[in-house]
Image: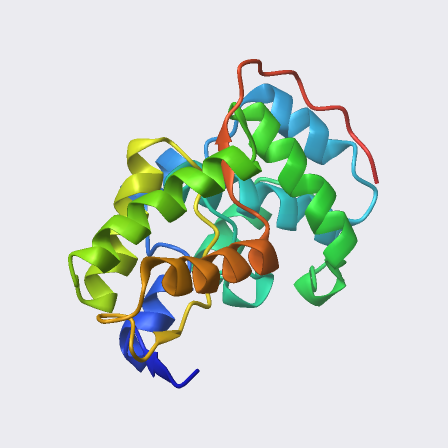
Length: 204
């Protein structure tokens, strides 16, 4: 099915990038609880320590995760200064994807979130289907989806969305929902509140 862009280049880049903090906000979001600090201290690789703490700070602010390549230099410098003295220059390219996945699970759990399940996905798809029936514009649908996630306190990880079926304003709800269902399954890193929060246990 032909596709159309939802966000323009500038909007897409902003959406897929971590928030830009002021000095005050940087101190606020990178002020880590002792449990997270202890977890980071237990990681053997300095790149893992830095990547974990940066991911935790961005998650605290935005309820989503970002690629290490998009981390802001000022944030990297600020958090690196919090690590043990004498830590060598850290290359975040060494932050292995599998380690990131484990750390993301730890961060979600600490903040009381869990991976989105099929019931949560169905709730969002139901919202989308209603908007499609009302012939709401694709970009409005996109931002309404974000509103739903915020309202339900879900962690947002839907960066990279670029397109919807070109005929979405006139497509059947089933066709549009099928598109979003495929995308949700592909991204697979949404989260919803967890009923319990446990302390993280350090791992490599």
